[in-house]
Length: 288
Image (cartoon, rainbow, N blue to C red; front, side, top):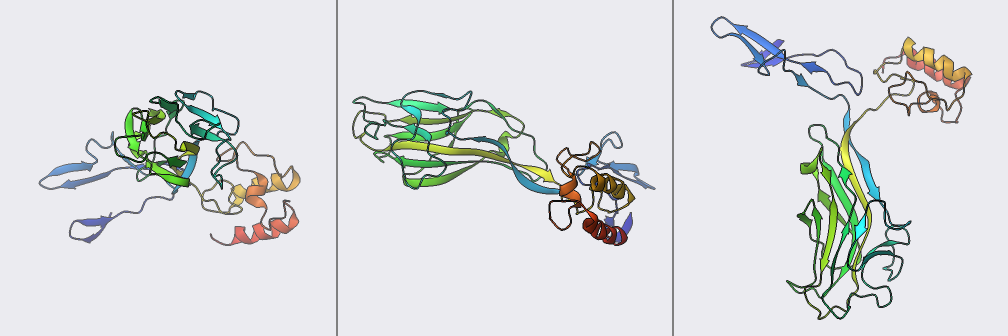
C-alpha cells in the first residue's frame, strides 16, 4: 500500500484477464490496535471484483408468431391473434389479444375477465451495479373510467405495471432487478368489472423481452485469450487459424464463440491470410 494522505492508501493489483474474478483482502497491524483485516474474517473472507464492463443481454423473449409460447396459458378472452390490427404493428403479424376477433371488442354481454400467464422464467444473478429490465409492447382501449376495465401486469402475484390508454403500440418497461436470482411468472390481468360499456378495442400485448446485466469482455483484434496482450500465446493459435478452417472454434478459447475470423481477420475480408499476418505482426510488436 502507498500512503496518500490522512487515512487514504492506494494499492495496485496485478493485471487480470477479462472475465476473471480476482479476490483480495487488506490487513494492517498497529502498535496499539494489533492486526486488523478487511473484510472481517479475512483471509477466509475476501473482497472480489469482476473484470470487464456491464452490458445488457437478452435472457428471455417471447413472440406470438407461432401461437402461444410453450408453458404459457390463457383464460377469459385472451388468445393469440392477427385480427383487429393496430398499424403499424410492433413485431410481426400476431400478438396476444384480450378481445373478440369478430367485433374487435370485449363486449360479451356480461362481465369478462382473464389472465395471460407466462411460463416460469429463471432470472440470473447479476454483478454489482447491474439490473434486470422487462419490456413489452401494449395497445389499450377501454372505458377508461376509474374502477372499471381494470388492467395490470403482475409478477409472482404483485402488481408491477399499469399500462395507460394507448391507441398505438406503446413500449412499456418494468424494473425486475429485485427479482434477480429468482424464478418469476408474468401475468397480464384484465377485468371489465361490469357488463356495461365494453364495446372498446381491448388490450394487445407483444414482444415480451427480459434483459439482464452481465460482464462483457472486449477483446482486442489478435488477442485470442483476452489477456490484454497480443503475444506469442496468440501467435500459436494464429498459426493454426492461418492454415486451418477460418470458422472452426478452438477449445482453448475463453468462450466457445471465439473463432478464427472473430479474432484474426484484421481487414474484415472473411479470410485469415497473409495480409492479416502483417497486421498481426505489427500488433505483436506494439503494446495495446
